Length: 91
Image (tube, rainbow, N blue to C red; front, top):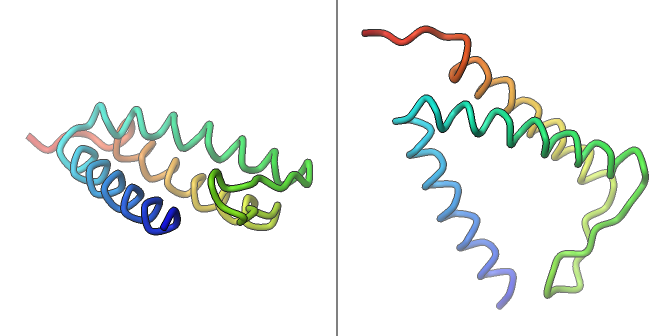
C-alpha cells in the first residue's frame, strides 16, 4: 500500500512540476538549482557507498541506484539550465 501511495504522489508531483516548468521560466530556474543540488547529493551517496532506506517500507536504495539517479538529475539540471537561463524568450 505504501508503494502505491509513493507512486501516486510521484505522478501528481511530476505532472504539476512539468506543467509549471512548461509555463513559467522562473520555475525552470528554480528546478535547475534543485536538480543541481539533488544530483550532487545523490553522487555523494554513491561515492560514500551509502544505502538509503525508503521510509515506511523494507526497500533500500543502493549506492548504484543513487549513482544512476545522479546522472539523470544532472541531465535534467542541464536542460533546466538551458531553458531557464540561456535560451532567449521568443516574443
